[in-house]
Image 1 (cartoon, rainbow, N blue to C red):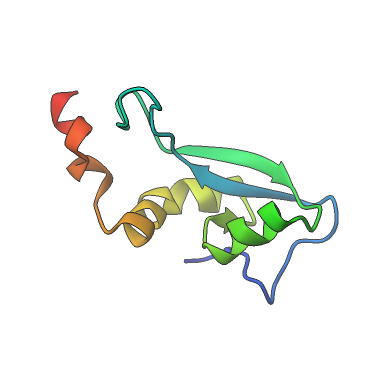
Image 2 (image 1 turned 60 degrees about the horizontal axis):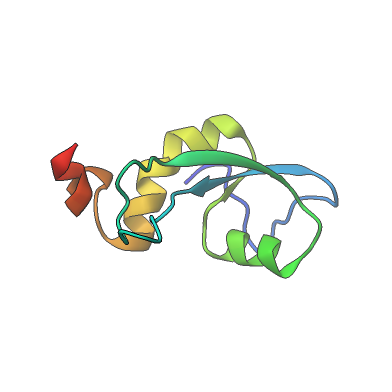
Length: 90
């Protein structure tokens, strides 16, 4: 995927980067009412920053994150976003 950070290509300190997020409802344990979101972050060199980059969800631009969010979800879960069990009830 284009414009994705890697552990050998990190952002500079305080530099913006964009991640893909989705949430599981803690009560129902589903993704109901969830959507794939692009979230803005700043790089501080923390363990969280490195984990997000290592997992492949960190992008250099918001546009690249938006273009790749469904591919990221599939790469991490093995499913298409539309194949989610709760998506069938929307």
